[in-house]
Length: 91
Image (cartoon, one colour):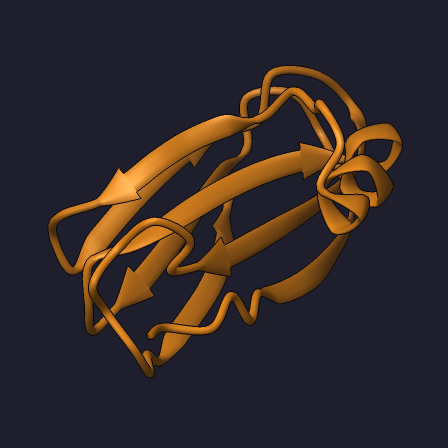
């Protein structure tokens, strides 16, 4: 059984249209979450996000609005176990 152990990274304040580039070494879920939604995600309540399943080593997500943003990476519902992730913000 794969345990659901998310990695949540605080990206700080980002401007609209910035690109968050995520590099991963496995098929994982990648979620861009606002400050309001990250706590809902952690509680496993209903939340809004951008992203999805990363099936390639690089996933780019455009920030939809100015604000405080987080990236969450996990294997919930996937067969992957351990993974490595690297996140950069490209203006």
